[in-house]
Amino acid sequence: RFSFKSDAIHHYGYNTLLFPDTSLDIRGKDIKQSYIRTGLDIRYLSTYSDSSHLNYDLLFSYNNFIDKHNNFENQLILDLGLNKRFEEKIFGIDLGITYNHTSKSIDSSSTTLLSASPYFSKKSADYEFQVGGSIYASTGNQKNVYLYPNASLKFNLVERIFVPYVGIYGDAMLVTYN
Image (cartoon, rainbow, N blue to C red):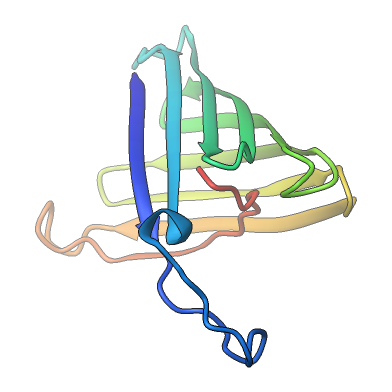
C-alpha cells in the first residue's frame, strides 16, 4: 500500500505582546504551512487454521514527512507476529522495532522503540480469553523500559448477538508527525 498526502494550513494571528510597537505586514505566504506525507506498507502473512503450521504476520512500513522549511521525519517500522495453535489453545508473540529520525530543527536525536508481547489464548464455543504482557524499551534522549499487562475475556450470552467483552491493555508508541 502506498500513501501520499499534500496539505496546507494557514496559521492566522500572532502574539501582539511580542510585537507591541510594530505593524506587521503579514501576507498569505507568510502564514501558510505546506507539508507532504508519503508512506509505504508491505505485509506478508499466513492464515493457517490447523495446528501443524506456525502462523506469521510480517509488516514493513516506511513513512516520510516534510514541510516547506525542510523539516523532515523518517520512520521505519518492522513488526513480526508469530503464533501456533494447539487444539483450542494459541501461544504467540508479537515483536516490533520502530525507528524515528527527524531533522535537527525538530529533535536533536533519533529514537528507537523495541517491543515484545508474548501471549496465551484459549477459545471455545462459549468463551475466549487471552493473557500476556508487553515490554517496551526506548532509546534516544529518554531511555526507558515499560511493562504492561494484557488480558481479555469474551463470552457468549446469546450466540453472535450478545457477546460481552472485558479487557485491559497497555501500550507505548512514539509520537510522530505521521
